[in-house]
Each structure stands twice: as C-alpha cells, then as structure tokens.
Image (cartoon, rainbow, N blue to C red):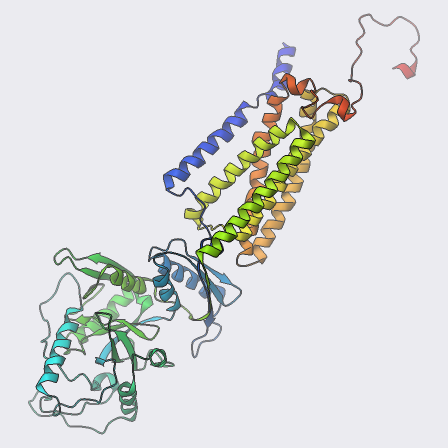
Length: 590
C-alpha cells in the first residue's frame, strides 16, 4: 500500500492539464468580455489618437488663502471629468499634475470643441436675479419720454420672448405676472439699494408718484459701465464683472436665445451658487415635445431658491428673470412665473445640444477653485497615427529579435517560449482593452514602450527556467527529473526578478506624473502577467513536452541534447541483490 501512495504523491506535479485549462478559461472569459463590452481595441491616448491637451492652473480667489490643497484639487478633477464626460466624451482624461495644475486630455472627436469650451469655463456657478437686460451693442440709456412707439413694440416683443424662457415646477399656483414691458435700460432700486428715477407710469400703492432720491454713486458707476459695455468684444466680455464679489451687483454678457447676438445684463448679488444644485438633466417635455432642463436643489438650496423665486415672480420682465452665471458669463436667464422650491424646469429655445450643455453646467459647474488656461496643445490624428505605427514597428522588431535568438539558441525549446509569449500578448491585449472602459486606461506612447520592454522581461523568465533544466541535464539527469528539480530553483529566481521589476514600476508610477505613469502602469501589469504565464502555462507545458520522445530522448534539435550540453554520464544507483558477507566492514566503503 505504501508504493501506490508514494506514486500518487509524485504524480501531482505530473498533471499539468489543470493549469493549462485554467489559462484557457481565463483567455476565453477575457476575450468574451472584450467583445460583449463592445470595445475590441485598447483606448488610445492623446499622443496616439490625436486631440487636445489643456493645462489648467489653479488660482486662489480674492480673500482666499490655502485654498489650493489636495482635497480641492481632487474635487475639481472629479467635477471637470464629470462635466466633460457628461457631453459623451468618455475618452477624456483629467488628472492633476504637481500641486496646482490639472491636465485635461480631450481625444479627437465630434464633441472636442464643445468639451474644450466647457473645460475652459472653470469658475464657480452663481444664480443672480436680473436687474436690467438689453442688446449687446452699447446704446444710450432710454427714457420713457424719448421711447417711440416702435421702440416700445420692440421692448414688448423682447420681454415676451424672455417670458418663454421660464422656470416652473410641476404644480403652479396660476399667479403669473403680467407681461407689461418695462424700460430695458434702467436699474432696479431694490437690488442696487437705490430708488429708480420716477416716470409717468411709476406710482406707489397709494396712487402717488414715488419721490426721486439722489442717485447713488455706486449705482451711477455701474450704470455707466453697463452703457459702455460692448458684448461683441471678447476682451470686454471677459473683463465685465472681473473682481466683483458674489455679494455685489455686477454686469455681464450672455448669448441671446437664438445664439446669434449678445445680450448684456445688470445682475443683482448672487442668491445661490452651483453647490446648491443637486442634479440637472436635459429632457423632452411630453406635452410640447420641446427640450427642457429639469433641476433639483439640495435641502438648503431649495429654501433659498423658494425665497428668491417668491420675490422674482412678483416682478415685471426682465426683473423676474434669474440669470445662471458661469465664469462671469450668463449661460441662461429664464423667467420666473411662480414660487419654486426643490424642483424646477427651465424651458425656452433649446435644442438637444444646448439643453445638455446647460444641464451639464448646472450639474458640474461648482468648482472649489478658480482655474486659468495655462497652455493648449493640439495633436493631429495623422501625427498620432505615425507615432503609433512607429511604436508597433519597434515592438515587432523587438519581438522578432527575441524569437530569432530563442530559435537559434534553444531550438525546440523555443516553441514553448514562443507559445508563452503569444499567451502573454493575448492576456495583455485583452486586459488593456477592458481597462479602457472600466478605469479609463489609455494606451499612450510611453505605455507602448513599457509593453516593448515587457517582451524582454517575459523572455528572461523563460531563459532562467530553461537554463535551470539544462543545468540538471548537465549533471547527468534525464529530462523529466530535470524539469521537476530545476523548477524550484528557477521559480525563486523568477519571483525575485519580477518583484524587483514590479517594485520599480510601482515607485515610478507613484513619483511621476503625466504620460510617464503610462509606462510604469504597463510595465507593472506585464510583470504580473509574466508570473501568471510562467506558473500556469510555461511550466505545465514544459512538463508535457518532457514526456514526448523528441525532447525526452535529447534530440539534437530539441535544445536538450546531452552531448551538446556536455552532460556527465547518467546518474545510477547500484543495487545489491545479496547481503554482504560476514566480516569486518571498511569504514570508507560505508
């Protein structure tokens, strides 16, 4: 009974089929997952696919200190990433670089220009009541006495158009304000802390005209800036309201609903900011079939929004409008017809693209820091394609040289090495492809270099194993015992070598930034896969080949020819069939 048990214990390493089946199942599963996910090629980075790379530099806002910290930077990365990906640019990369820079990589695509515009818009989001609105071209401030009938009709048409951009929740109380237009060129006294200049139609509740106080200097200065503002000038638009705190009134520009002209505004102090918005989505209104934007506010934001809409709903156009201001520019200025709370709907002249843009701004517009565009680099797809082609050629040359060396030096053993390289390449390709949609891994040029270096690391593991087996054959052992005795020694060397490579890749990934991390990530991934392939494929396959006559007999083309290796005579143990004769035993013979 002892002999069969011993045989079973020795046969355990001689059953390599389980490991090969495991590798086969893993390959089938990864390949199936790749096709089921719809991603059959690795996701390419900017330098290979082409696109735009934007470097944003964080700046402290006036009065802030130590706002540039890892927490705020990571929050900004998440918001910018969500904002860009909300446009469908799922291949975009957003990551920090250093202490105060954020790198945004936008691949070449249909939404590249749109995404770039939103990435550059990185200031905080504010909701400000509209005080005055007029055309973007600087015009003299109109007075009630000088307005002609034609001007009144234009004002009325404009007020009616703005009234269509409404914000309303599902339940309305029916108390919609009248659409009687007001003069577009004057400021509202309540918001600016100064009473307006009276006119024939301006009467108090008792029917008497309000008394005209002296104009406030701050109000007069703001009105003067508003009159001189030319929204068709890009520099003037960028300078409008610069340095103004959210608690102060300001001037701003915004595109008209048709997107062809510019409107300019005097805006009251901010009532809410982007942090008060919980969510916003673009949707099609079932009744009208028009695109709208549905907003949801946080608990604190709902209370503030209810208070301000209660006041705005009692005002006349345009003073019943609520401007959504991002980076000092009015993204939208919907009218308020009733008191709103936690939910609101913005409707108007939206198409699918503009509705998604506004919803994206509302959802992801609140950044904890102010960012300035430091640099913009554009890579053409042609240049990226040339770089990818050069990388693939370099990889093919490296692989070919390794294969030629293996064939010339190891002969038949090179078949095992080549099969192992193919399995390693298949695992690497499928895993890199699946990592694209899961963790947004992008294959850039340094990552391709890492994959090329991995060819040498993987081949080195095979060479260590083969040499250990050949050393055992040189000692006079046959192939099967040589494989089993050489494996433990080779295993230790392979693990130590791969551990050093993986440690170097991990340190490089942690201490570097940008594209160098792609090299480190690929190097670390392929090092781990090298351990898997050697343990679960190369060694079991070598065990199977050792049973074949071609290898076991030491054929001259097998790479294991004892004569070629200079092997010693086979090790033999002598067996005694008869007991030793009586008499003294020489200690040297014992």
